[in-house]
Amino acid sequence: MLARLQEPTRGKVLANGLALSDLPETVTGRRLAYVGATSHIFNASLGDNLFLGLRQRPVRPKQRDETAERVYARELVELKASGNILHDPDADWTDHVRAGAETPEVLTERAIEALHAAAFDEDVYQIGMRGTINPKKQPELCEQVLAARRGFRSKLADSDIADLVEGWDPERYNSNATVAENLMFGTARDGAYDEDNLARDSHILQVLDAVGLRERFLQIGHEVASTMVELFADLPPDHEFFQQFSFISSEDLPEYKELIARVRPDALAQLSETDRVRLMALPFKLILARHRLGHFDEAERAAILKARRIFAETLPEDRRASIAFFDPETFNASASIVDNILFGRVAYGQAQAQEKIGRVMADVIAQFGLREPIIAVGFQFEVGIAGARLSAAQRQKLAIARALLKNPDWIMLSESTASLDPRSHAAVLKALLERRREAGLVWSLQRASDAEGFDLVLVMEEGKLTAQGKYAELADQNAKFKQMLAG
Image 1 (cartoon, rainbow, N blue to C red):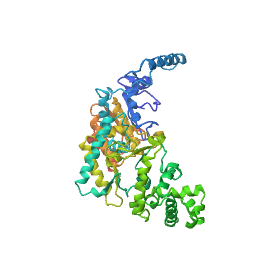
Image 2 (tube, one colour; image 1 turned 60 degrees about the vertical axis):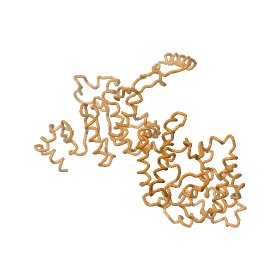
Image 3 (cartoon, one colour; image 1 turned 180 degrees about the horizontal axis):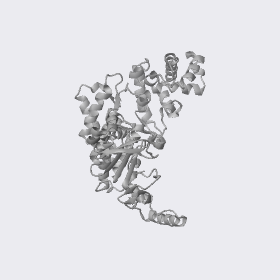
């Protein structure tokens, strides 16, 4: 009822003598915030969801050139004629002052503070690490990432974990990367060189022909398919080995099983084009250090390096934008931030490799002041319909951070941390009590013991208020509250 999601059946809810039901949403929308168990997350970016509560009206006009201004003037005429609102959708609607930010630039800092209070900053940091940066829009950040790459390589060289990362070297085969990555030596863009399409790509096939590997790929594909079918045919589809070792999915395995059953190794020349593509696609996915199937000996790896050079030299002009090649001195716009800093592949099979590398990476990120900019990159992440690309806990954290950033007079919470683990719940509770010390916070708590930090505790039984007072008084004198605490 405080959040106006339900009207009282009798009487009115008053705030400062005013009935909430009589107030316009322009008032309650600014002054109240509600976070429930299933607060809605919109199909937009994480940042759009986070800043939504600050976007109630345009606060800074869109700067347009003369031509664009004339176009907008015509649009305004149509808006008036059709009875639509006249607010400019392209203006800056984000009220940074409401969030306690003196300038729009400081708003990111306020947003990160809200994320931290909601125990969501680490999640968004990890999302940002997997995000990409546009060098044209953020050249300075790209330079910072390149500096972090150099710092990371320096730390690896001076530590006992140097062998945990195999870097990208134009003159060496990377055994911890796929054959496709070794051949193209870059990150594919726009789908033109997706791994699943390489076996039918005319340019790739010409390159394999040039180094004498085209028919060898077909043979390896047959051998790999035979091995995969033998190893995984009797395993259930959800078995962990499919995820760890197989690059043929459980759904595709029956097709390969049927193909291997009817095609002998000495009859590969008679294969249909469809079957050839299906078999030749497999070698591109091999990671030699991981799969260890005995393919691609030293001579064949040397042929792949030769193919790498031919691939780059003969790349058609209309395909130049389809590959972002690996260059030790250049930021790769198609690779994630973490891949740009790592600039290589983690060595497979090394004990605690991810944890050790993660610690070094964290030190480098802190050294170069990249944590906050990386969190800001995470704001660009598209969360999907109703936040489907986020976990239930992350959706709740985002809703709490959104409510905090709006800086309302009152925040109401009801089962708003139900999906959080106990540690995260405790952190959020502590942070909100601290941040809302001079403002309103109403929380329908799951555990009576969490009420200790509140100024006033209300005890409800079967929809009725049965007791109220200070936590210490109720814990000492009220039987029902004692029972709740004991429970």
